[in-house]
Image (cartoon, rainbow, N blue to C red; front, side):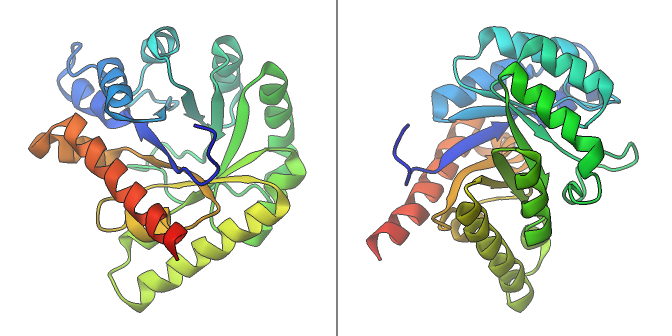
Length: 251
């Protein structure tokens, strides 16, 4: 899809693997979920290979690389182990994220400004291998500037605080931060994505931000699939995103 006004949907299949690993065995298969997501209209697949392998496994990444016809976005911590895996598989995109063993899910964005010197060789080597490097960051100008200075062409804005806030002034404040950060990213020439915690009730205002190119959504879609099916959950999200973007274009 080359239309710059089109908002891509990346579907994260991590928590299909979480369900599988809770019981052991092979079911449900996150690779099967990724292929179904592609059929349902996903523009890409995201998978986070954690150091403790709590959900996605090395074998999942290998199979995704083999079977997918749409881009794979590999989320990973900036460690030598993960770098070697990414350099071996050469996925379409690699998103560097913070990772703590004790956290349930990714808590906040990567502090690119503080970790600039440490992160620089990861960005360079991944870029040289042909992967598009993205930095998962808070909607903050200082972090955007640090990502730009590293040479990362893409940033993904953390939407968790916005999604966790109750409707009202607090959520609106977080939304404004994301809007301003996305605008600033575009001004600097960065491709801007967003994700974390988005659901049907929160996606509209984010999808309406015209300088965003992609949303990455996973946990909500896997949970919603229990009630309406994975294909239907993805298609409903696609409709919500398209409606929000169309309403902006009409203004």
